[in-house]
Length: 132
Length: 501
Image (cartoon, rainbow over all chains, first blue to last red; front, side, top):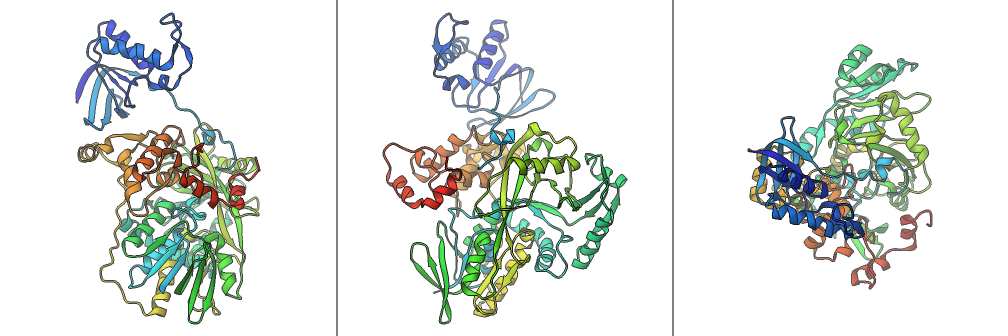
């Protein structure tokens, strides 16, 4: 089991921004875990513009906006793993993670940042009747 | 000429196929759908292995239920089918006539059901702390269980195939007729198959084939049952399957966990006009909730993951039709098999297979292999087993369905194995990818990609379910979608789009 200061679950906008902020605040022992095979999260499918007006003072599409944060993560040399799925998190902050290359890994973190986004509630969850 | 043609690859047809595969016989199963376990009742029912106190003494339903129940331990072990003997409770609530519990008990004794007790409220609350506040007493039956009905069917079919039975999917039978000392099974495409015997395991359509060959006619009167499914977070809310004591207000709605940990509420019982009407309705779902609330006071409606319905093949005479009609020698009915048919399936299969073997003087097969291995279930493995599996095959280190923790390795295996999956729903039934709380919102495109890659088709040609339910219509018709369009008759279109909108 590897011990860490900060473990960030989710490599979308929230997770990336949190990683950058943590690093700038002086935390060096940190790791981002991303389920997909690249960083950026939901922004990658938001191809309309209007992102970044507050943060960067210009109009960007989702992927462009995400790339700004990905670049910062790379520049600050913040480590991350893609294709890494967290299977469980225990009460004492141990995350059990799998990915095809490293296999099954466990991380114990002093602090965990949960930035996994959300799931939509489909028709069935809302109890709407009809044909399947 | 074949020895046996079985019409229908539901749980009954598949159980008979496997039983016949223990003998030296040439057996063919024909199924109108593109997968086993999908034509009707097998894929959508309450998934209960009934104890046998409910059916009227002296009926075939009672006989096969009580004989089938104890067969599940060996069968599910041999075929790696998920099965739990979680016991059944029939609960009487405030205002119910407790005498009803004793009547069921007596009926159970008459049917030969072991391990039954009437328990008082204190004992009931000890067993089931979350039972509704108005619960007063219960009949507890130790032999009640739960099973995965479609995995049971797939396991039986896979094992039958491994032991030499042939399957033809997407093959509709148009008619059956006797000719001399044998039978002719005519397919919808005009092809005629000859066989010494025929098994009618056509479920909702079993009346059609029986009535073609015998004067002892019956009808299948479709009866729909609607269900709600609750997320697996609530799997421990009840240990047993909780039935309600039938009253003059209705047969009651049951609450039962499934072998996968979700919780099932239902079913309603509404007679309907067409056998394919598997819609859920506002009134049906409201009825499920109204009754289920008695058993489970605070049903977490925010944690529903889906609703569905199943159509039972209710026979007009009220009982199963098992065996040869006296005016159609060599034609065997396993027809009108509604509840408790899932429980009765292994016993029904035994009887049909023995009768056929006797007629054809078939010898036993010396190399019959009773075992079938299930697809590994990553979600149920220990961390050590998971690490080992990923080290052997990295595809098991890639989670495709997050809600149910299904890996790419499992999905690939579901496609590659015998009678393998060819569409999204078939993968779902075999692996649970898409069956969780997001109902495939996230994994559908990923599963479609794996199917396309494994089967060598284009992504846009992957079907959701039955042939023609392609995900995306392409501008220029491909060869295959052209074929599909020709296959879809107006009637099929009506089914896909019943309201005309």
